Image (cartoon, rainbow, N blue to C red):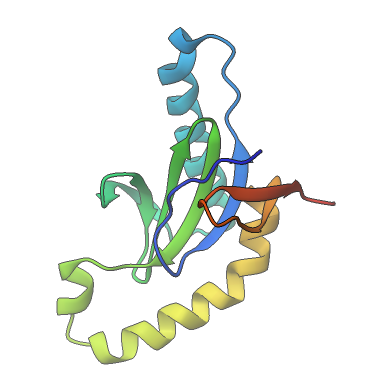
Length: 140
């Protein structure tokens, strides 16, 4: 697996694969993936609520809480499931914004290993000079 997939800077990221045998089924499989991720994230992290949005052009926000956006990015079947500190106007305009970022970073660091174990089938070992990623199957 040598592809690379987009995800927001600073995100906690887990990698998996979306295998679609017939291109005609891609939309169905992608929708199923999004719903599955929402369900699992909601069960694991009850403070997340459904949200439909984008961070840039490639990173789809599926859920959010007071601190973070949870989402998915897909490129050529490689899936990045990520969670990252929010970066929207409502987040930064809040009265308590100065205390928000340290709280968000603390929460993200507390859930990182659980998040990666829950959503990741692969780990990214690094990137080559041409930007292609090198991934290995996660050992249970």
